[in-house]
Length: 254
Image 1 (cartoon, rainbow, N blue to C red):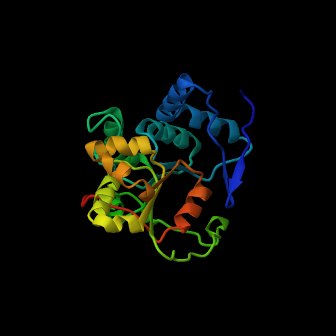
Image 2: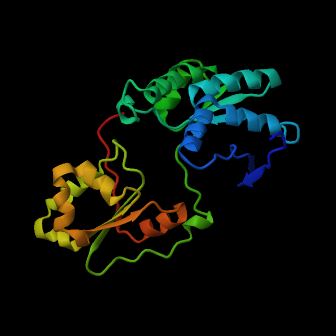
Image 3: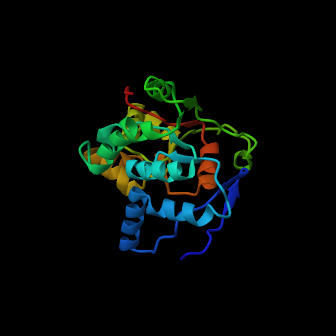
């Protein structure tokens, strides 16, 4: 709307949120278009640069079209562009499949667009080596947890007296083998009744669809599965804190 965007702060870093999206289906479509093309990001950058000059621009796993546009924007202002890369998606794991637009954009981002940046923040040795070998300046920062953050101030864990409490928290994508975990519980026979699996994220309907004919497991042992749906991040952490173990199964792949 031409006004200066309000700049917020988190842990000492100033940031500006993207433009709000109107509710409804077309609002969501418009939001996706703005994300892909980067129009929302560039509009906000332009609206704040006069009052909040930038030291650098960090593109976090951004679409390739946005990275190319940011490269031009930063060149004009002589601002470094850094790409923060946290995952190289398996092309078969993203929506629309390995030949869909998201898969193709991911490959373009990893192999071409991010090579236009002034530097790379890499989450792993693999990604760090990949870009270092291509002459990029890199900085490897693995996943970190700030234990001083208030969100970790949870009730101390206490082991339950009778049941083993398991938890799955997150989005059950194709790489997260939650279905295999449920199949594994059935191998316990009657001892499955001594376990409870708390599921935060996937709905019971989604899990039934993933299990297919094996969804009868949920009907045979209704007391063994608790569905919480989507929760806020603090609520999800509180649920996870109540578990003896969390479940994270992945394929043996890169």
